[in-house]
Length: 171
Image (cartoon, rainbow, N blue to C red; front, side, top):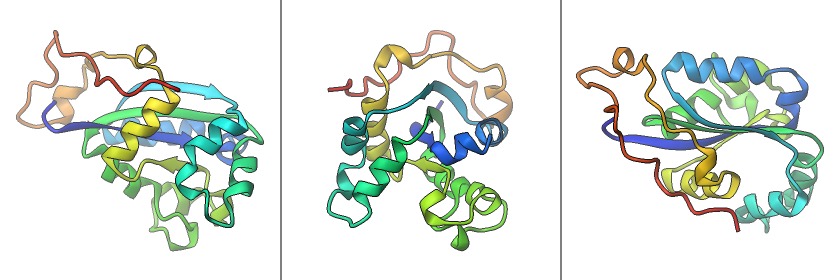
């Protein structure tokens, strides 16, 4: 698929506890994005510290790591045209109060500390996050039969499409 990219999306413990996993996956599927990786797991504190390392100097860093470790998360990799930017729009603003109607956070959240979902904010951060959360062999490379109906003027991915990008493997 021309200009296809990948993004990392994680449903956080509050989203899992509220039973929103199916609703969130459904929104990405209905938009036409292609699920290539999914894990249901409880990440270690050290792993979460590494994931949120860019926030280490922020006053909420320790509480964020502790919260993310408090329950299971659903980690996903989605593929599609402009999936990073579109995914961020679908999520809504970090603070749910500022989110537009119809976004995930506006529909399901009240407070910034419980905003149920994380999404990569750039192609570069997506590559980093995917490489941290998934081994290359954990990503499934397949052609969706719906792809030709979603993307105009393209034949979708050819049957013998190249392997997924080699994201750096977990350290």
